[in-house]
Each structure stands twice: as structure tokens, then as C-alpha cells.
Image (tube, rainbow, N blue to C red; front, side):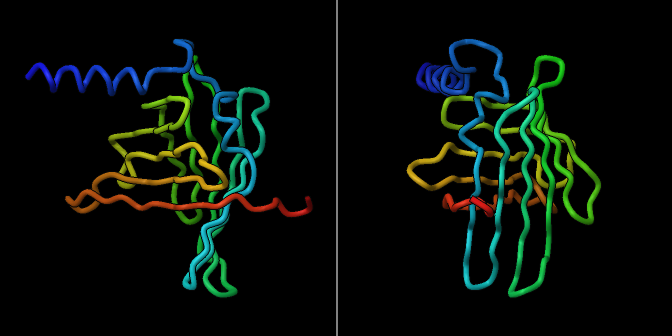
Length: 157
């Protein structure tokens, strides 16, 4: 029991805000830039603007062959002293995920009441790679979808 308690305390400490301060969008500047996950079946592109005005804007698109199959606009913003991830996916209603976990290497947003996903996360780049994921329960089954991105030049640069 004592080991489980120590492990839980350690996990909480790892997820604490940087420097004990309230997390801000500026702490997520490592997301900025262009990212791509390509396979023979599809290409997923994600692009993030630099933090400004307490917000970051992100957009993504998924292409199969020469056909757009999905897109999304995301607004990361500071609201009422808290970070919020606002997703606007194609063909679906907008969804909002408040901050759950924030560290110098990872961020997770969560809305347990949302259908799927309930969590959206990003792990800070190592070299030129970024791990993003969505996860939660769908039809009674735990599910996780990962996006393993590599940094690519942004169009027009």
C-alpha cells in the first residue's frame, strides 16, 4: 500500500505545472510548426501557430490518395486561469477539453462526458518527432489512437 501511495504522489508531481505556476499557452510553444504522419494509406498534417494573445491556433487535415477525408481547427486558449482545448472537427459538433495534465514534456486535456475521445494529448518533441493521441471509451471498450508525427517544413517557408 505504501509503495502505491508513493507512486501516486510521484505521478502527481510529474504532472504538476512548470515551476509551480499556472500553465499558460506559452508553455506549449514546443507544439508550434508543421507536423506530418504519412503512411501508404493516408497522410495526416498538423500545423500550429506560435502562442500569441493567450492562444494557439492549430489545424489538421487527413488525405487518402488525392481525397480530403477530414479536417479540424483547434483553439488552445487561456480562459479563467485555465488552459482549454477547443476542437472543431469536420462533420461533428465542436468539443471542449479542459486541461488535465501539464508538464514540461506532456499535456493532456480531458472531458469525461464527451463521447469519444475523452482525452487529447501531446508529448513534447524528441528530435523531430511529436506524439499526439486521442483516447477514451467507445462502445464500452478502451481505445487509443496515436499519431506519430515528424517535423516538416511549413508551406511557403
